[in-house]
Length: 348
Image (cartoon, rainbow, N blue to C red):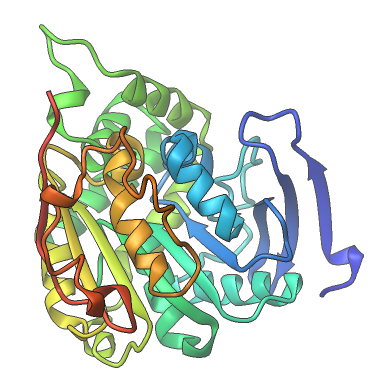
């Protein structure tokens, strides 16, 4: 573990998600990491999407009692915030160099070194999913498994690059203006919960909109520049030996990319779960849909055994009848996961 001078600890026990924030000096600047749970347990590292932090990206999943119990029973959670995205972040100095995606990956390695962690489980959403996948490619011995939500693996298409450039210019000149917030909300959520003239926004979207107003626009701009310059990592995906569980909403703007990424992963070690009527941020829009696949995924590591009386959450929109039989096969619960296409229907 690094010397105490490399970190500042901030007590967050009063905060609703609990935990303690550590501000850790890395080779590429200071990174905020919030630790929740028993540090003697295996580590689960999370990385959020663009312009959000762990509160606005993962609180839906961790406020789901069954999912929270499942994850905290097996893991100590290390929520890494992208530079300048933590709660109460100050504006990063314009004198500081812009970071690349590779620099962000090296920050994760420094965080693991600080806490004395070896191999960890990783969870990321969209941009965060790209970063932790790149981390798994660069530091293969340090990743046990990947839980990817609406992931990216290719360099930006011309359409995405142009949209990101529009957002980048708006952020640079006008800050977190209304247009940028709308573009980001479309990135995260399905149209069903974003509302319209006749239907109000859902509470989840309203909470996310408020959180975006708290972001330092120049910090978001810096991360967006890194993501818009990201390299294509497709060629390395087949070499990944850790198991991967991919979630994607069928209304996500990155749905096709998630399917493409799944096709490039080793079929022996990867599984895909598609969530109907959901956007990119499944962790917030339909967190209960993640529970059963997570349970079976973790069973393959010997980390979680469902009780004999109730191995299915009554609150989850999933049940064994909704899940592909391939996911329930002994092979998928052991050392290998088959590629599947599980569709989740909304319960009315």
